[in-house]
Length: 467
Image (cartoon, rainbow, N blue to C red; front, side, top):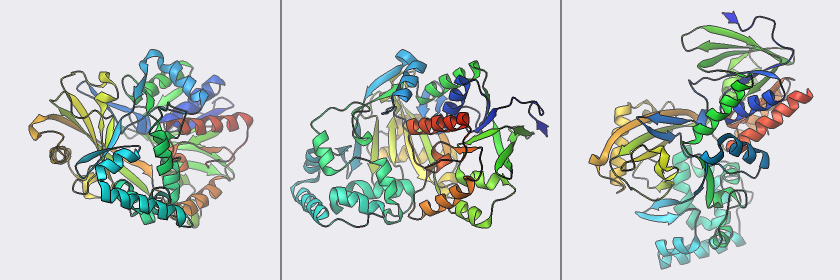
């Protein structure tokens, strides 16, 4: 085992776990303050959940990553990093339900025409009933969405997709999930929005009609930020899996990591920022935390994700940036059309690259399936949905993404609170990012969490401050 730089590190050196949006932002801010830092990243490249994969000239993200924010500092940094390569893109996303496309965000007139007269009347009556007799308290995802749309629209446009994504019944999902993911959306808000164009930062996230996007995918921005960090003297060490997080009294003291070739590496620091999953952080702590903390961490759940990128010998498939699949007959949940995010994502304009998203867990049969079987499954499902012919698929690439979503079951908050109470005892530990806080935040919120953490480091104050 080697100890990086022996014992002669600078008086203040910050170790950052994870090189996703949060970790990179933290390193960037530390560099601006002339504070030495090292990022330890498990994967071979930076970007985390927001990186871009290249396969034979075709580029695709791990899901769709829109860039929009209300935060002026974040917006200015994005534009500074990419300049003219930061494109303003129109948004088009629809729901495929019962072989028909419906606008999303929902536009009431479109939904009513698509559903028909009788179902539309039932939707309106259901909505009126929900407004007059709402479910109280709003404890579950079903309660939250039914109160804002009525039971009929909840069952038609929210239930099946949410259960496909999360793998549990909507009655087991906390209302916090809806409050974060579709904040500001209701039948009234959708109706009001149907008659107005909205730009990023001007309205609820769910309702925006345009967003910014890097010309060569979301990873383009994070690679540019990584270059800024290393150019300012920061260090990014990829292919580092964290084995142990050592602590004594009220302080984290060192990280033990393992390189891709199996070498052990011990790195010391004065401050530690973590964006790795809370459950993994607790598992790595040495000595082990009390039993109740370990039990709470083990009860934190995650939803994993498989992206199957298919290359089609077809110039146009659908006009959307992405579509939601509300069809229980297929396992795919959402389909990205990366060509419609940026034309430069594909090297051949006569072809199209689609990203089929499958939500699963690492222990299930889908995750364990071979790449060949997953490409065959996604090809068959595209054909079943009427989006292409089997023979039009000419290539495919599979990417598995563990812990893509921190799961909000109805008991998650109590488990998170137990873990955070323990971690708050460390004066030099700060939690950042989606999995670091077990909070399903977007890229800009992950960046903001990192900026706040760095401010606490610079002021010498401690504690995770994750919520």
